[in-house]
Every structure is written in structure tokens, then in C-alpha cells.
Amino acid sequence: MNNLFHSFSLLFCASVFFSCSQSDTAVQKSVTVVQKSDAAVQTAPHKYGGWYCPDNLNGFPAVDIQDWENVPVVVGRMPTQEEAWNGTSLIYVDPEKYPSASPLDIDVPKLARFHNYNTAKDEIIIVIQAVNISNDSIVGFRYLNGGNGSARLSEVTFLSENEISEISISHFVSLRIEINASQKTVFDVITKPEYLEALTPTFDSDNLLDLYWYTSSKINFKYLNSLNITADFAGLHFGSYYIQIDAKLENYQYVEKFLLLEDESTNSTELIITCGPYIDDFEGQKFILRNWANKVKELSEE
Image (cartoon, rainbow, N blue to C red; front, side, top):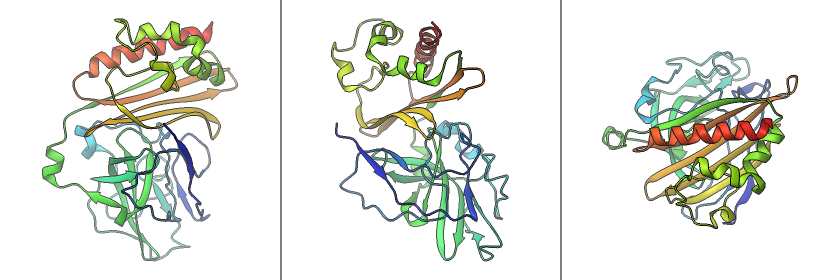
């Protein structure tokens, strides 16, 4: 698959901040692998913050679809700066800079669809914020699979109650593993072919995979169900190694996220995993992913 790096030309206003809890400061996260859709028309990004941040798994962890109404939101007012950083909201607007900014008359949280150019998928999102800034209508949202984004109101389509009722119950596997090794060491174990033989039995104990499956994979892991990869990325991303594999099959969309957060003072790394959603095989995949992660830990610490 020919994956292209796509970078938006983003404007940052010092009076508008957004949450991205991997970092101690507000950062524009705009570069990732993308497979463009010919059917969708891309518009210029807005300038008010909260852009694409799929690796913000601390600030906005994955949400199972049946729990979407329980996410925290700010209702009927503009959020404080603290709320824009603690996962309650997304975009903080300085009232002195934009005194006329106000929340839109939209009940939140609200489910919607949004065309994500970075993953080449029309994804279901949870809108947690809707504001009017200088006559620009902006929504802030969290992805079901973790992380956050924002868009103009015209770029999202809200789901009807009937559409919501037809979505299958599903679950994400979310794991955190402490590893006594640097993030580069852990990343090498996850991605380099010399570790493939040791890791493959953890997810393919019955030898069901084709012998050459690895030639099209960036990592030493594979979900056994056959899916079409739409985008993949594996590399250093704003100081932390990050891997994201997006795939789909008809209406089913799947993602794998692996985030490495290093504590240089202890030479240790937290491996954060989010995979799914799983409809029928959640417990089995949770068992597999935990075994795989424990093997990654073992190999990294050797």
C-alpha cells in the first residue's frame, strides 16, 4: 500500500489551547500517514486548536460504543483552561481575546461521523464540545479508539437515534505494561524482524497465518481476521514512539495503537495498547494481546 505523509498547514493562536496530555505543553499534532479518499473533499483546517491527536490515550482513552453517553462534558458554558486539559473538554478560548465566543445550542455528548483523511475512514466520533468563535462553528471530539480531534461543524454528520441503535455492542482492549527498558529498545522488539519468530506464537499458536504475512506488516503482531489496511504509521512522533494500524472490512472498522512513554530517569517505558473494537472475540483478543505484550516486555528486558 502506498501510504503518504500528510501535513496540514496549521495556524496556532496563542490565546487558544487544546489538550494533549502526552506533553506538558500545547503542541500541534498534524503529521501522520494518510490514504486519501477520492470521494471526500478536504477543507482548510480551522485555527482554533484541538487538531488531530490520535495518540492522546491518556487524555482521551478509548470508549466502548455502549458507554459513549457517559463521557465527561461541559454543558451550557465555555470550558475553563483546566477543563480543556483534564479530559472534560478540548478547546480553551481566551475570553479576553474572543469575548463573543459562546457554546453552540447543541446537546453534548453527541455521536457523529467524520471523514478522517489520516485513516481514510468515515469514523464514528463523540462530539464533546461545540462553540462559535468569530462566526466560525467548531466542534471538538474524541475518537472512540482514543485520542482527539476537531473540525468545523459542517464537517461532521450527527447520527440519528435509529442509526445509533443499529451499532453493535463492542469493546476495546486497553492495556498498560511497565517495561524496564528504553522506548527505542521496546520499539525495536515490536517492529524488527529478528523478534518475529519469538512473538508470533503469542497470537498465532495454531499456525493459521500465511508464511509471508509479515512482508506487508510494520509490526510483529497481526489480528488474524482478514482486514484491508487503510493506513499505517510506526515511528518517532513528537518525542515518543507511536504505532497505529487502521483497517476495515465493509462496515467494520479496526485500529491498533501502541504508544511508548519513556521515563528517562529510570530508563523504563510504559507500553500503552488500544486495539479494537471487538464484537464477538473481545475476551480472546484481550488474552492474546496480554500474552503478546508480556512477551514484548520479556524480550525488551533481556
